[in-house]
Length: 582
Image 1 (tube, rainbow, N blue to C red):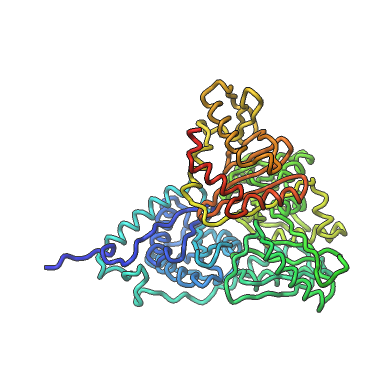
Image 2 (cartoon, rainbow, N blue to C red; image 1 turned 135 degrees about the vertical axis):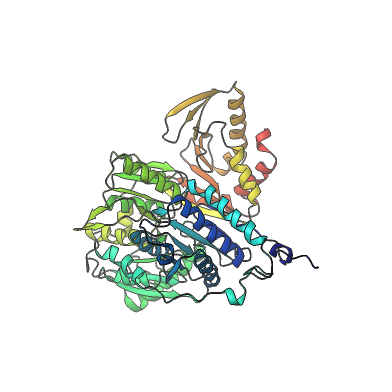
């Protein structure tokens, strides 16, 4: 008698388990087989069932429809089907909202008090994709990840050990034809609910006379968001639609993309006249990209000004009259300086919306009334109800792109200023973010490990001659090391090693301090800041550069990403020679 083969015995590929990044799971499409997506979805459901976070109500399982949606990547439709198969097998119904922005799906699900799944890879290239789950009360938090991973591992073990003939999956890890499901008709009320959130607080026709270009490309919000903008009274010109998925990182906009957007503006100006702004979003439309158009006399080569997301957030928070602000440690120092001048201290978090949300939850617990947060990419989060323009802005504690675009345009209109004049009121700190691809993830992990202090409460190290002051995330002093101490000697050697990367020949002064809350943020005595941070779920290493001039910030970023001998590659060599032993 022939022994029964398990599914894992007949697979013709090597399975790769999904990994969490800063926000959800992302992976190469080839690794996101139907089988892996199914296990991820079913495991997440089982964990949230145990945590009581599937719904806020008491509907029986068979009557509860789980909202799902996706972006416009070519692989998303298949991933949605695998997600749907798992939801149905768990005993739930499907509420398919179609292709729409991640925040639109999240807002719809939160208003219904039901968890949701968004299938998206956000801004990363088309050869990757992912899935983001939300609890019935908000985003999955970092505190949930360990439990989800355990539940997913249990489902994986069960499915891989299932008899191959009985499995729903073939030897390629894909659903067998008889087990694929057809998605139901699209539920359009999700779009209407999301659009209504803004129409209630941004009065119609307030932007009459403004002309905005919306760069459509492959952003999932390219149908919905222009309609929301049109309610404001602005003339919205749609341009640049693409049938191919294009990767645009709103946090590290490339020179090539800026040139392309400039050409679009020039073409539209030739047809329509003056353009006030060109806007778009990332792939799943939860991060904004906002560029002002100068009044330069040359219509052939219009000058565009890119407004970084961290500074966009500051203007939006000011417009909303926030009394609590949470931003990642990577944000432009102008944000902290600006609100400090208003008597409001910003809470600095690790990078990623789950950490911003945790800070907002703490602010709510402390009784704050107008609670907001945002990421350096511009995705804006609202933690509380906020009265605005005679209405009430409903909470949406997840990254959102259309709120910052609207708020920036309305703020400028109400002040009678251009977008550039609006941003020129902020403290004059300039930033530039960039990254390199194909950076070994093992080296990334080593960067974080080598600079991790022995105590969890230490996030800042300040170097003062013969001693190192130690500070916690609030910048309170929690101790000090003498350079005669073993720990002090170790971190002083690491500082000196970093100065072999950030050299005087490259224009750097001595390192005055290092923040290790998330990556390595180096503060130099001449005021420059260089923040190095690995991606949480991709082979990438980022640089966030800040200085008092745009020229210097851009120079730092360029020196960092130059291949093959830029500062980030120098850091790679440094780390791979075991800096911990220096």
